[in-house]
Image (tube, rainbow, N blue to C red; front, side):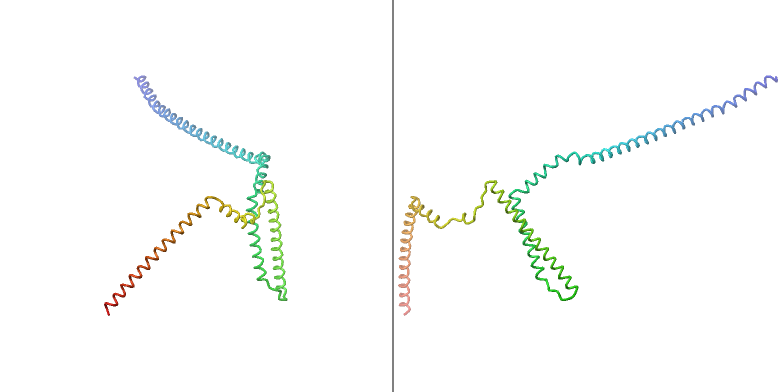
Length: 245
């Protein structure tokens, strides 16, 4: 009896020890799952950091490439950039552009001359004081500067005039005086004589004579009608006066 009781108690103790073992297993599984989830999150964060680093490196490489391209671009287009200024110079020396530039120069000369006359109009002699002498010297310098500027503009205008004449001679264009474009009186007389000898002129003259004769006849006829009407009116007036009397 004693042995049986001892065995039964031992079995009960082993069952009691089995329950916490299953709980521990479940707890360990949960811990493992949590640790796996944390590791996955850490891996994802590392991957994101790597992607960000790669993007930053790519951006740095692009910036370096752009900087290198900007540093090298001024050297490569040096030879092709020389011909365009020549074309621009040729365009600037065109006759039409020179004429326009000369017109602008003339306008500038006129404006500068007006400014000079305005300064001379306001100019006053020194009054004997130091301040007045300084002001007079400043105005004198200003007048001399304006005169030098006008002189330089006249020289520029002369150069433009000579260059235009050279271009006209090279292009086969000669300067024609305005007087030569106006027809002379003798030329007009010669043309009128030629017209008088032509048949069309004779025909028009004959038609004009016929029309003038017809107009004269009609005027005479109208005058006769008017005179006749006046007679009739005068007779009517005399008859009315006789009746009243």
